Image 1 (cartoon, rainbow, N blue to C red):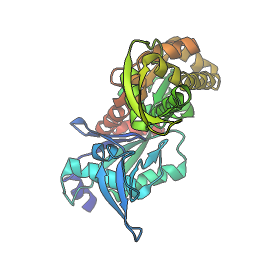
Image 2 (cartoon, rainbow, N blue to C red):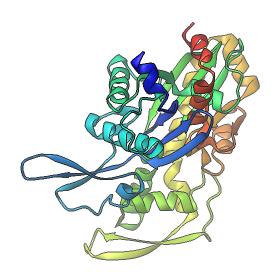
Image 3 (spheres, rainbow, N blue to C red):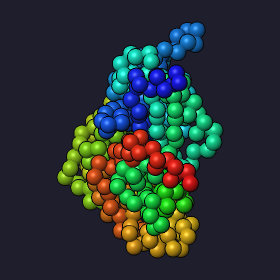
Length: 342
């Protein structure tokens, strides 16, 4: 009874807790928060940790902090690596929704990767409960993404969803509101940033940080057709002299840097299809592949994967919101949970 009363003071919440961004939707309002999944933590001389900043403010500190401050990403590849920091992130975001209401106790639908084991799922559940949730429902990310994309997940037909996230890419085949087969490719958007860092190191002898690499990816990144004429001047450290140096980087350089990670996704798509029952695999060959996740916004990624796999590939509108939109739909229609559990 007391929990029911607490629910009167709270909004039901859909949470997509990603490696690079955390997105929240509220029942009846849709997506309302989209913040970097970064927390700035200061450790004093006694080893006590204090939260200094969360989200955009903390992200701006990456690569710029003194030794006693760390800009921490609490979630890696869909797994909570820093429990107390993840809890602080959730509390901060929930307070953004509810104000400093000590009575907040929302019901939460949270997306988790299919690859998450029982220990990881329990950690997510307990973290949400510690942050104030009165009821937590965990939903596989590909199912939430498919719902958010408006796909007919309840039909007896094979649907392949490729979720290009920040910490990795999850390739899944769905049917009858369930995940038939799934494969995880590490890296994701962060891996793409690292590929750009390695490319600049090898080709130009220039060391840049992850923020600069991400800027290059967002400004010039294309899966195919990067141009020599599109240039961005970036600053880094010359690996020979050790002094700062500026370098023009072309769009074709970024495309070349991303070729390896995209090839890996294509191989994983083919391997997932080979592991799919023949009837469902034929559905995928006929209906194609749907790209979701923040990385799916990379221009020409659908075309590049289609050429590498021989499958039709499409990217939905606002692919980065697919998971949270699907979780929000479940918040509105909790009977969908019964179909997924059946």
